[in-house]
Image (cartoon, rainbow, N blue to C red; front, side, top):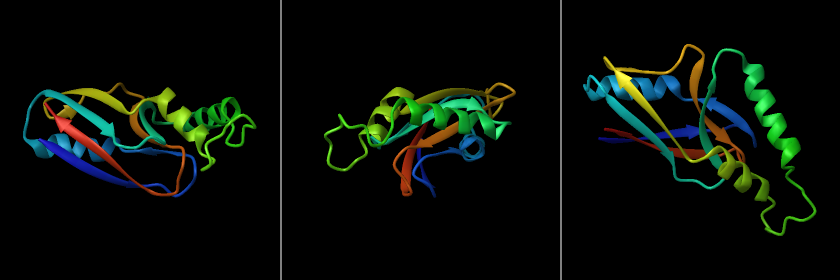
Length: 131
C-alpha cells in the first residue's frame, strides 16, 4: 500500500511535523506490524526523525544548516539561487523508515517525523509505503 501526503510549507526553510499524519495512515492500513517508508520526490527538501517536544531544536537545526551552507555563497553557480537547498537536502536525506507494532509507530518518546523544507514556500509530496 502506498499513500501520498501533500504538505504545504509556508516559509523558505522550516521543519514540518508529519508524525500524526503518518501514524494515521498506519492505523488506517489495518496492518498490525511492519515498517513504513517515507520518501520525498524533491531535491530541495528532506525527511528526518528528530526531537518533537521543544521547537528550539528545529530552529537550532535550521540555523546551523543556514550558517554551514548559506543561500548566497559566492561560489555557487546554479542560477536559481537554491544550491544551498540542494546540499541541505542531500545531507538530511530523502527518506526515513519507521517500524510499527500494534498499529502504532515505534518512535521513541521524544521523536517525530519531519519534512525539512529548504526552498519554500511550496507544496511537497511524500510517498509512504507500508510493508
